[in-house]
Amino acid sequence: MEHSLRSGPSSRQEPAIWDEISRIAESYKSELQIAKSQEESIDKRMVEVFQQSAETRQSQVRLRELETAANTYRGIYETFLSRFTQSVQQQSFPSTEARVISFATPGWRSSPKTTLTLVLACLCGLGLGITAAFAREQMSRQIHTRAQLESLLRTSCLAVIPSFASRLPTLRKKGTTKETEAFRKISEVAPFSATAEAFRYIKVAIDLNPTGGKVIGIVSALPGEGKTTIAATLAAFIAKGGARTLLIDGDLRNPSVSNTLGYTNMPGLFDLVANKSSVHDLLIHDLKYKFDFLPSSTRIKPANSSDILNSPAVKQMLKSAANDYDYILVDLPPVLPIVDVKAAAHLFDAFILVVEWGSTSTDDVLRAIAASNTLSERLIGAVLNKADLTLMRRFEGYSDREYNYYSNEAVSVEK
Image 1 (tube, helix red, strand yellow):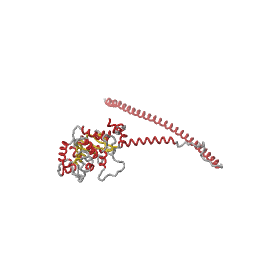
Image 2 (tube, helix red, strand yellow):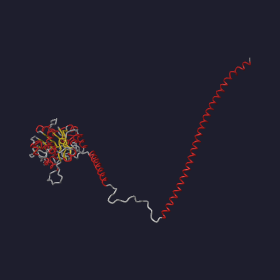
Image 3 (cartoon, helix red, strand yellow):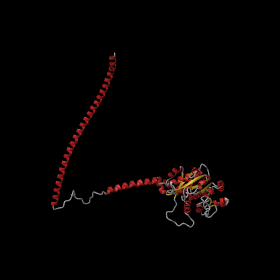
Image 4 (tube, one colour):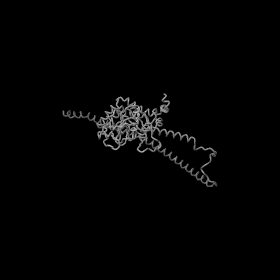
């Protein structure tokens, strides 16, 4: 009984021991396989190293052969050079590296080729000139054509007035100005000329104004663009046709119309507001040009000119004048330097913008129109003033047939 109890536990432990031994044997077997695979990898690497070493030894052998050959060739070259130097020194005549290939032919040269050079220079100059012309045209901000002005303002170019400035300096009479001379020259043009027809076109544009208003403001973006001359000349052309016309000098800072017509030191618009004078006492009937004129004082330059233009007295005067006249033209100050036009724009039924050809920039015109919404809304057109018609025809590319129509007044009358 005791023997059976003792042998029982040992018999149950033997399989576990064998299993543990088997597991240890398997682990050693896997380690053996890993060691064998590492050994094989090391063998392959050693073989590759031996092959690379053999190739390196072959390359070193080839390098030594090339170095030996190079030394040999260097020695041959040095020997040849020394012998050549000795032979040159032994010669009695000097030796040069140049030699004659062929003798020059008299009367003919191979370089430079004058004709080809001139042709290439002309082509290059022409190309540069055309490129510079296009670049200058694209960079130019001045207005030179009707289409350019109409595209900018999105309204009609009513007329193109040529420049009447004298090329040669002339002696002016005392008291006359450039505006006076320009007004005299324009007002004396032939009745069937292109200039006279241009002013008739402006009158027709005023007549066709949808608002039907009679009070027209003549403005410009900058001073010196000729709005005074245009206003006075337009009043003279309209009055010649028998229409009742009133011209008002609304530029209180610089009363150019009063100076142009010769009515200096006369009471006018300022006295209407400041002294409450009667408008009938201030009006002047110009016997030569057949229109009534309300001047502006040339002695006083009020700082509050915008308040004067926007005063109730001026409003009442314009309202009553609309019942007595067919056309009321007001020469207003330039838009950009002072605020008068912006302040009194609501008093006028329509505006005409005068733009100086080749001088006023597109930026100035746009700024002037943007200064007042009333001005932009009531603008019936623009006048391109002081134009050089010869250059303008080149810019526009028009034929001369339109201009030749006015060159012969006899033919125009017969037609």
